[in-house]
Image 1: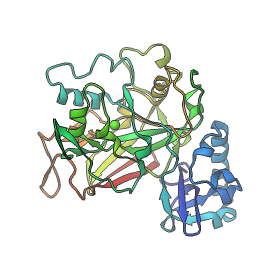
Image 2: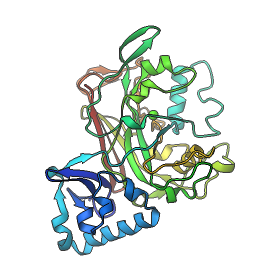
Image 3: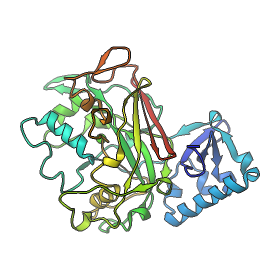
Image 4: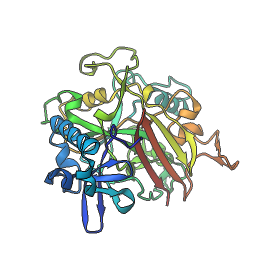
Length: 367
Ligand code: CA
């Protein structure tokens, strides 16, 4: 069972007269942790207080929950609430939000589209994980309607974006903070788990505003995340992929590992892509090391996303920009229609699995 004992992601739920409070998903139920564990840290409307407790508490809590659910179900049965009776909320208060650009296939595709006459990858790309700071206040939970943004799409022309796009990404949730001027310890001592991210992007707004400073209003209008945060402990690891040149200094890794997660992007229930996380070039521990390399501190609730996940194949591209090659090669949908970017009323749903573990879904409909 994909929502079984090896998964157990955390979220925030409410139902009439109860909550919002922290729960763990088990099958088609959510376990009310404050009631089941008699711990008030879970009686709040976000995961943050629990995230701040750190790795030992995360591990111990998971072990206790697993034990209760596998051997002592009658005791916790009264605290298992059917999912169809609850509303799911943003699982944590997002402190800072950083978005990386860690897929070599995505970066290469974008380079070819925007700079067809020069090298696809800029000189810094293989030397550091490129990223930018996004807008934490517009990170919303799956299911939140997305309003088509307006902006300056050409010089002096302010109008609704005609190139509204998605970016299928994986987000990493920071629990344990650091002081300014210090470096974090081990990745697993700071990062609690992962969530699915759709980094909605208005390509025409982004294209006009982005030179030379990078993403701003073309990205900041909305970023959707899944309601469940899957602990790192639940994710199977695979060998990492080679990096050339070998990163030195602060980007050298303690251990060589990767995550074998396959995403699926559905546009109005039709699968348009299956991006493979295993092909990502820069790793989440390197992203953490990089974003703190200058002494910038971490806060509980920081979210950093991988950047668009794309594979080598056409059917593995994690954005419509790449799938339609900036509208020059529209994708053909099952009903025969051609599509380059999102239309009003479109629903995009991104799901993901890591072996038997499902990461759930992040979904949004364009208004
Ligand atoms: Ca992105």
